[in-house]
Length: 401
Image (cartoon, rainbow, N blue to C red):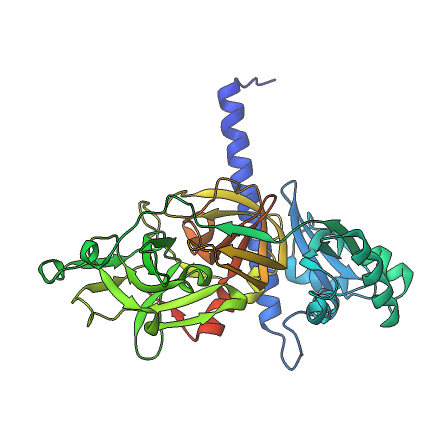
């Protein structure tokens, strides 16, 4: 007997299929991550025959070197729907080649260097065509062949990511901020909550960013947010006119991972701040923190970004490891240019903007809300995410709440 379905029933079944397929991909990612976690006495966290993994059209794709032990991966993944591809360079070697260029970014006008997982290539963004020729000649001097360069490098023209504080940033002074009559408030440091700071310049204006996550050192608790916000700030506040909880003396910073830990210090005004894993203005709670092996298998997956202005903005992982250059222009017109290393590059989260920097980024599947990192910057084409593993290692903190 033939059975016909109406459009509503078909859409329902389609939704069930998509959810089931997403779960299957998550299981495959977890199996691969678990396999990587068992590697011992190796210089990297990856097997030497692993060349990358990505999700495309709801299918799990894994790239191996030509001499790979495919049977090992088939046994680990245990899923006949996995698509296998082959190349002549491992993921670890691709990362090493990109990292070798770091000392020459300025010489060759390289403003971004991205690992493109699906093609096993290094995409270099440069400011002029002459640099492309210079880079190719340099690589040849390092014994890279024409064939290797053509197969594993791509080039494009572009500029550094520019972030400028809006000209209408409100002016404040100490009398606007805190008095002895409003110092008993208890503030909860929700990921996604606005944090504000009085700048270090003569003009009494403030900057705003977003709490990425609550964190702790061995001695104190606090929050993690964007370094490019904190570096121009002398005092930090929970939503003026009250809530001064720290000064720049209470911070630990990592410019190369665009992150700063701001410790709670109630001695300034008596404000009490409490840590939390609940994402601000949502019903979501961070349940897991990504590991390095988790981050290596998220290419093609959808991430959620929570800025205090633009919340729950989604985008797709385009590169699992991208170095990029940021030029930050402060309220006074002062420009700071710096390199941010090993970020996740995103496509599609275009509504992120000024003030969202530092906010949490998650991968969400069912009841799992996995903290991936924090919002670093929004460029003209891509968005950039600081990895939580780099942040916690560089700052010497752990996620808490």
